Every structure is written in structure tokens, then in C-alpha cells.
Length: 527
Image (cartoon, rainbow, N blue to C red):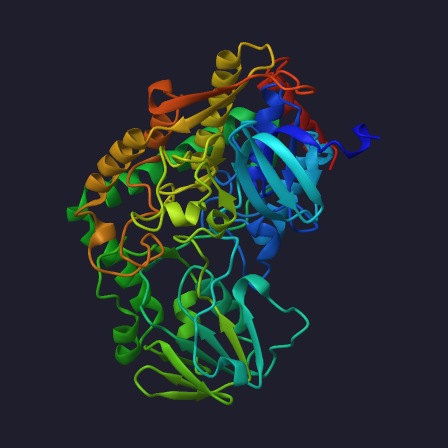
């Protein structure tokens, strides 16, 4: 009877099944680790590409760069792929690499607590508890929508939704619609809904720098070429990576070149917007790159249409169905779409994790802000790793490159645990030395100091106190170097004797990269 009630234990618990979670699962299997679970609160994989289904939703990174290096996709339909195609790609990754057996859908993580005696994480979920030697948080920065606290919102008589919780049952045709915000989601939503709504009012607190997107359909010939000669797709990806690395280098290290980028954006706007007054509203007063630079070919034309009104002031109050801006202008609307972003600099998962001293990660970050060692591990939280953690965000290149770099770190982390454990069932954990984390972040913030990200604008790169907690101030190649291996001198080694029924950790019998990639191509051919 005791065995029936024995609590489940796994070597690794991965939280989330977006790019980060599925990528972690693939790398674990390729490294020979099969004792892991992927805990997903939704009823399907995909992460942010499952949640975000708003009109016009697409990626602003080229398709052939916004995909795993170990799972190239010769069938991308467009140079910048729409959300349904990205979600389909992730579903195929889950199937091709045999991940379904590890994924537990409808399982929300409610709390995680470190057991200092057993050297494991006690994980409470909506489907019951389990323990894990290692936890990998792959919840991502775009998982929890942020709604502003607007006086009178509760009394609004119309329809309200966030861009990440779009209500497709509500028909916008002929309606008076307000879009709050002009960020990455808004510049896709606005052109998509403008042709069908009666009136469109855009509340713009801060204008964005917008560059040409140059999206196009990928031809059948290109697809056949990439499928028959995979090297051509690798070369395409390499060229895209090189261009983005150059852009990142300019933003991070050559501020004297940024006026040229601003000139391109200004000319892009002038081609579509002829009204001088509207141009003034849409012209930023901050240096390009301070906030995320956006890509769109149809945003400016949509704003110039007769049924669109731009209020260059934030939403301050709602009186019945009347929206009032900070400078007193009013708009009567039937529906409000909040494009107000996500909880990026105040990571919600940090409130669920209790470390060695019983405090949550959010509490441990309260004084100095969100920070970690190499964007991946945090002092006081042994064997807890982030995929897309603090100071890993990019403004110009593909986050998949950051994810894959951190997955390299994860695999080496597990190898180090195996080596230290001696393969005899002894339990081992690594806890970041505070001095190592402090030194790393001091160098990081010294590099950010005086950069374009600290030139005075408000962005998701900064927390509420203005600290740069989200951005990585370098190229993806540089990040790959700092995460290429685990340096044990940065960690304190924690040990505990093997307990009854606890199997020795292992990382053997690896699945070759070539075999996994070949399997993905086989699945592609079968479509």
C-alpha cells in the first residue's frame, strides 16, 4: 500500500511547452535523459504562440532564423511567418522528437519549494505533487498579460480584451474600437482590424520607431531547393543571423550610426503618412533602440486612413463608454483592445518559487531587481534554471538563439551533477555563489550603462525602478560564449546521501543530432 502512495519523482521538471520548454525536452532526450516531464497549464503545446491568436499575429524575426537549428523547416510559407504556422511547427517538433510521452497538459504549477534535506524541488501542481532534482523554468517573458489599472474600467459597458486573450466570438465589423498601446502587438492588430471596423481610435502614449518589414511569400522553388539541398537553408539561416548580429552590434556598440536607422524609419513613415500633424504625432523623441524597434509595412498606411484617429496621449480614465486621455481628449467606443504588454521585468513565476531560506525568488529580487548568473541560475535556488531568464532579451535578433545557448548550459549542468554525484545515487545540487552572481551582473550593468537602453525612455527592458533587468547588451554569439559551459568555481556544491528508492542520476545513451534531424525531415516529407 505504501508504494501506491509514494510521491512521483523525476530527474528534471520543465515548466512550459513553448520554444523554451520543447527545446529543453529535445535536448534532454538527445543527451540520453528520459526521466523528465514537461508541465503545461494549457491544453496544447505552443506557449505564447498558442495563447496569441489576435488578427495579424506573426513573428517579426525571419522564419528561417526563428526556428530550431536542429529542426529546420523547409516549408515556411512566408519570410515572416504567421502565428498558425509557428504553432504548427511546434506541434510537429513535439511529435517528431517523441516528446508527447513527457508532456502533461492541463497541469499548472502552483508552487515550488526547495527541500534542503533531500536536495530536491517539491512541486505542487493542479494535477498533484511531484519532486524533481532539477527544475527548468521555460515559462517565457510573454506568458502573463499585463492590464493597466484604469479608473472606470469596471464600469465600461462594451467589450474588453487583451491582445493575448482575443475573443474571436466578438464581431468587430462596424464597431467603434479603441486600441490601447502602439507596441509589437498593436502594429499588427491595427492594420488587420482597420479595414473592418467603423471607427478606430489609437491611444498612443509613446510613438515607436518603425522600419520596413518587407514580408513576402516564400516561393515553391525556394521550398524545393531547401528540401532537396539542406545546405541552402543553412546558408540562408547563416546570412540572416549575420545581418541580425550586425544590427545588434550597431545598437549596442555604435550609437553614432543610429541616426541613419532613424532616417530610414522617418522616410518609411513619410511615404505613407502625408498629413504633417499626424507625422508629428508619430515621430519619436527618443533614440532608436531605446524601446524595441518594430517592423511593419502596413501600420503607417492604416493610421492614415479616414476611419482612424490617433490620440497621442495615454488612456487616463473611462466614463461609461467614453475613454478619456491624459490630456482630456475623449472617444466613444464599443470595444477596447489592450496592447499593454506582459509581465516581463516582474516575472510571475518568481512568486511561486521558494528557495533555501524559505523566501520566494520575487522577495530575493526585491532589493536589487531581477538578476541571475548568466541569465540562467540564481543564488539561493539550487538546481533551478531559466530558459530566457533575466538579461537575456533581444531587440533585433531571434530568441531561439538565446534559448539554444541556455540549453547547452543546461546539458552541461546535468553532466556536472553526474560527475559530482559519482553515479552511485548520491544526490548533488549546485547553488550559485552570491559573489559570482554579483560580479557577473555588475559587469553586465556596467556595459549597459550609457547605452541606448538607458537614454531616458520607458520600455520592457527596464523594471519599475528603471533598472535594465531584461535586455542582453550584446550579440547572440557573445551570449553563446558566456553560456558554453558551467564553471564550478561559480557554484557551491551541496551533497546528500542517497535515500531509499532514489535512482542514480544518469545522462547516457544519447540520441544523435543527425538522427533527430533526419527524423524531423522524414516527418516533413510525410506531410
